[in-house]
Length: 274
Image 1: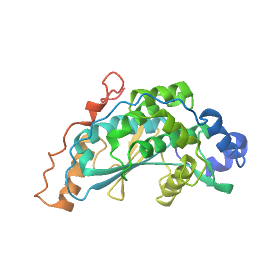
Image 2: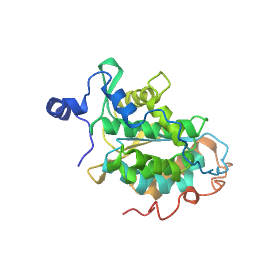
Image 3: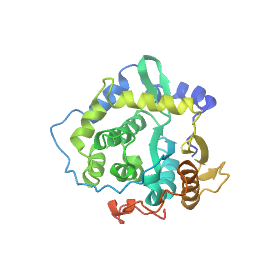
């Protein structure tokens, strides 16, 4: 199934499923609170190391996804995760989310309110675990990969808490962020993220952008519009090339420290895909 927003899709499907896709004002907030009420329970946080970062101007790397889209899972697992093993210190990586702003500061998600909540969980994990902006991917990407590999289970609390517990995310903080309806809470972050994707004309999950330009698109289980190839080796090559152009020959591209995979157990993440 193609995870792509479109005027035709919205005009037809939203009319048929308005109660699920475009909840009335306050409905999504209620949905979040019902699944993730502020709780005193604390997930068992496991410490994650940090790679040694190469100095220099980093290359923006961004993906635009929907959290309950199979193309998002493929994009993260087949492309982004293995590429970041090699070039995480060279990039500013960011996940943005696709949806539609609605009246009353609401958000419409293609796969319903549970997808909106999944998007919020991804954003909150990056926010709470890593004060720097943008946060280093290795501190939250294992959690995001865990969510995506079982995206059909979102928003089951036991599933989400299990992903948090195994991947160094404090579930209490995640819980509080997802339940926060204030200006700095999860829903506000989601709205800003959706507005960013809309502004950049990223309507297909997964759209990959490198250095401010569209690099490749994963749609309906296939890669599209990928002029320089769609493999993670191609992404690594292009990132290194752009990084070198920005920083000159004196920068040491090999100074990247430990690989991202050292923070992710092999039995949970299959780097070569399914």
